[in-house]
Each structure stands twice: as C-alpha cells, then as structure tokens.
Length: 243
Ligand SMILES: NC(=O)C1=CN([C@@H]2O[C@H](COP(=O)(O)OP(=O)(O)OC[C@H]3O[C@@H](n4cnc5c(N)ncnc54)[C@H](O)[C@@H]3O)[C@@H](O)[C@H]2O)C=CC1
Ligand SMILES: O=C(O)C1=N[C@H](C(=O)O)C[C@H](O)C1
Image 1 (cartoon, protein in one colour):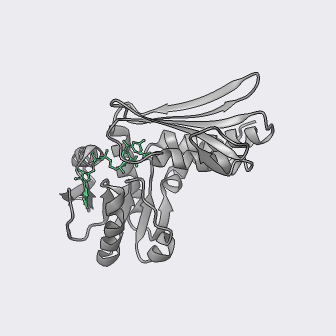
Image 2 (cartoon, helix red, strand yellow):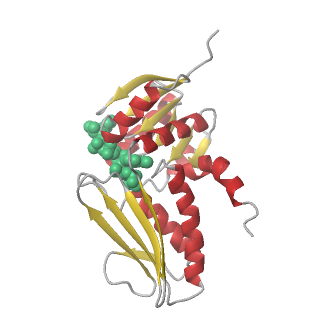
Image 3 (tube, protein in one colour):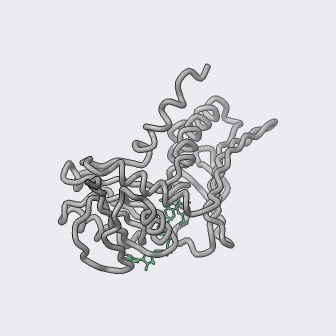
C-alpha cells in the first residue's frame, strides 16, 4: 500500500516557481496537482506555494481561505496588515521571504550583531542586498527581515535609509545588477574594526528545497506562521551551550 502523498499547487512558474516544480517532481512524498502562471481558480490542495508576484498575493490568500488550502507565501514585496486576523485558525499560512535555512540562521545572528552594536554607538550596523537585474522589489524581502532583526537587537536604530544615515537610521544598500541569485551581507563598522556575515545563494535549488520543507511543515497546521518557526526545529539545538 503506498503512503498518502501531500498534494501541492504552485502559483507562479517563473524563476522560483519552476525551480520548486522541478524539486517537487523528484520528491516521492509530494504530488504536484497543478501549477498556474496567471490569474486562475485551481482546486484545493493540502498546501499551495505562492511563487508569483506581490500584486497577486491577496487573491491567493482569498483563494486559500475559500478552498481551505494551506498557503506558503514565498513571494515578496507585499503588505497585508490584517493577515493574522484574516487567517485566524481557519487555515495554515506560512510566510517566507527567504526559504534558505542558512538565511534563517543569519537572521538569528543578525539580532546578536545588533545587540553587540547596541553596546557602542560608534559601531554602525549595516546591510547590503544584491540581486539579479530582473528582481521587482527593493529592498528584498530578506533584507527587510534582516533589517528588522538588526533593529530588534539595536533599539537606537528605528528605520532604514539608503542615504546618509542619521544616528537612528540603519544604512541599507541595494544593488540590482547581473544574474545574482541573492546575496545579503549584515555588517558592523566601527572606528577600529569591522565584522561581516554574508550569505550568497549559488542556485535557486536552495530556495526550492526550503519551499518544500515549509510545505511539509505546514501540512496539518492552522494559523499564521513564519519560516523562522519551521527552521527553529533545526536551528534551536545549535544554540545550546555556547559558552
Ligand atoms: N522566499 C524565497 O526564498 C524567494 C522568494 N522569491 C520571490 O518570489 C517571487 C517570484 O520570483 P521570480 O520567480 O524570480 O519571479 P518571476 O517574475 O520569474 O516569476 C513570477 C511569475 O508569477 C507569474 N504570475 C503573475 N501573476 C500571477 C498570478 N496572479 N497567479 C500566478 N502566477 C502569476 C508570472 O507570470 C511569472 O511567471 C518574487 O516575489 C521573489 O522576490 C524569489 C526567490 C526566493
Ligand atoms: O527575487 C529573488 O530572486 C529573491 N527574492 C527573495 C527576497 O526578496 O529576499 C529571496 C532571495 O534573495 C531571492
């Protein structure tokens, strides 16, 4: 008797969506029931993955609520302030500006870097975001997540700027050029030393595999979740006994 497979749908068949479809086709526990690359009303699935565009995310949330499907939102650049209230415990929704486990680790470390910068006003935390020339949003969803982590750790920084940074501003530089899959650096710059931490994606496979990890994790769950919660199962044990 064969095991029950998780049914998957994929919104968006561009760079990310195609990579997810390719990875899912090779996963014996998953069944890709549909992929769509434009407005559509597909049938319910266990979990749909949104790899489309910011503008399409609200309609995909409406679809998920109407069909009772789980939804993993990988698209970036959208804002839905009432998302938690709308989701409630009706369905499961997971938001993920970056599907890389290493980036989830980086976000944790960014918070610690922020805390370190908070000890000394001469230490400036900063962020760099480099992506391919076709990326629609800037800063990236990942850069926004990392900026939030740095600012949580360093409360004197309350907003980002791409220009000259006032003391309360976090300097965030965006580069859109070439074919870069996604490179982010968090750094500290002080009078006598610097510290940097860089993540560079070498393939979209890392995002595709993370998207499938998120779908498996979300199946059977209700409520609003983040990829950080999914990653915590792997990352939490790494933070024991750091002395
Ligand atoms: N969370 C993560 O780890 C990652 C997130 N992304 C994000 O994923 C999104 C897609 O990125 P790419 O694949 O590079 O863009 P892309 O432009 O290559 O693909 C987007 C696709 O969505 C399709 N689309 C547009 N409206 C749609 C709708 N209503 N329903 C279904 N499909 C629709 C377009 O036809 C296009 O093929 C972006 O927001 C990007 O920032 C990208 C890579 C990794
Ligand atoms: O559009 C992309 O390509 C990527 N987008 C995500 C983001 O906005 O952070 C994640 C990754 O960096 C690639």
